[in-house]
Image (cartoon, rainbow, N blue to C red; front, side):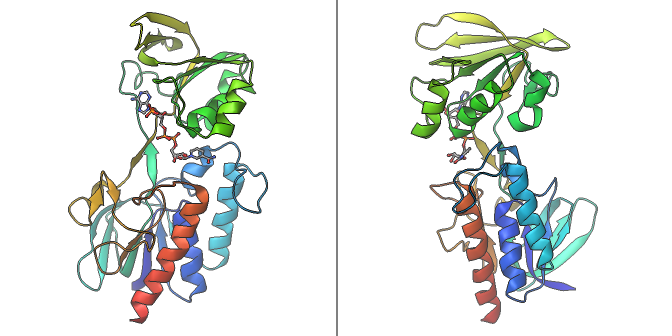
Length: 302
Ligand code: NAP
């Protein structure tokens, strides 16, 4: 069968696209390589989505998933490994060898956390190194944890971990945070968080589990060892667009599109964090999903 819309990625952008597609009477299929919900499941608390008050990232993900499925959306839990986006019918190949066809495609592949690329990072993954404070924070109850990064994720992770751990080091490579002022204020007001500015991590060490982190002050060149049971890496995001390389216009790895979510390929749209945009937020991801699905519906009408 040929679907009206194939959506790649079941994060907030992809699921919002599925909701809008289904409600427009279109036949959608959504592919997800991992679990539905995307990056938001790593967020302890969402408090800036209009009218929602405070909800956890997991609660939000479950809500949007149930809403999409309630409108008849189908989600296939498999990875799309190759695409042919030329012509009126697009083909998607999955990691289990299956192939799907659709008249339009919405790319909503999102982003993954950037790695530090330092010794010990891979070796201690799951043994003290983590990219998700909400997933793994409780393993370090009453211990010392370290967060690396200076954006909103690092700031939120540090505050979240301070509620569980005895002490939290927050390491940032500059002397000014990138994250929002109100998140910085929460960090500064928390007595359990010790900030090390102008500091980069050099190596994660231990026997079996993480026990220390070697760091260096980039201004004084001074090196020191922090005793820590965990290293939470929060140094930014990398778009998940390898399979579209050479097939859709990109800019620094992100799929190039404006607020209309329309790519340079007819019938191919993009939604969420993986698009070139200035504000990567939950609300802009779901907004993109609505715009992309509506644009796909107009394309099909024409
Ligand atoms: P981000 O804003 O890109 O920040 C990444 C941080 O990591 C920066 O402070 C950067 O330092 C630092 N960094 C990058 N590479 C590094 C390296 N190799 N070693 C050490 N430090 C490194 O990433 P993010 O915090 O994950 O946030 C991503 C997006 O999601 C942002 O748009 C953010 O606003 C949004 N977000 C929003 C919320 C919310 O609204 N509640 C929550 C989480 C995330 P420099 O500052 O020196 O570049």
